[in-house]
Length: 369
Image (cartoon, rainbow, N blue to C red):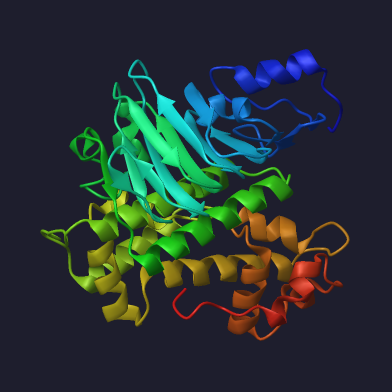
């Protein structure tokens, strides 16, 4: 149900200890709250002064001083999924940002873009780099021009569950010292692209989703940070792994065992206690493709099966795609057409329901998706 929410109720939602969803879409002059489901909420606000970035990271106070002349404008988005929160901000002019040491939560941030130099403590930052601000540590950041960032904030007790699937990232010791993980330029650019697309999709789409789909999106957002960090770490020791054939069979059985909806690769790694590298080698040896590609093909097949038996008067391609974790609809339609030789709307037997889907034939896939 859509409707207006009074200013007091809206402010209460934005400043509560945990992002919660009202069964409504609230629209204010400078901000919007977008309904997603019972367990996910997305808020977006337009900022017209540096004071708007005192809440640059949800749940934490940041002292901000504007240092570059001009009218500062920007946007600030917060995404909440249970106890997990992700903040995304962009601003037009240079600032200095400081966090006091009393914050007992861990902040993991990524620089998304920068018009000029960016430094945190003595670290210089490039887009895609990941910054670690441990609990109880003062932070000092300097942005010499307009920039954008993303930051996760969570309790140190949740490190293992947040980064499950990789033994090094799920180890609290990895995050207890201030650090900057330098991203591989190509990997960092892809992580930024994926994160931006997920956020854009969550802002646009207001379809309800199951707990599994919500968890898949949470894992996908965390994965954007984790990918840059893992590429900055030395190669891991895979340890003992089962035979390739057995591992692939076990993964397929796990997916088939009543797991309706998308399954993220981090969930599989955690379930079977193997690294991503070991998982990739097993799938490449047995199926000639990596696990990410295999999981995507499985999701596409699930969409195809649903569309084929659905009534186009009651079902849309967007609804079905979202239930399988496809939030980039143009990219989804490209993959779908490449695999099945037809557009998803043709499978459903209806005219395209989204302009982006109709134009999917023009979408070009990156060299290495």
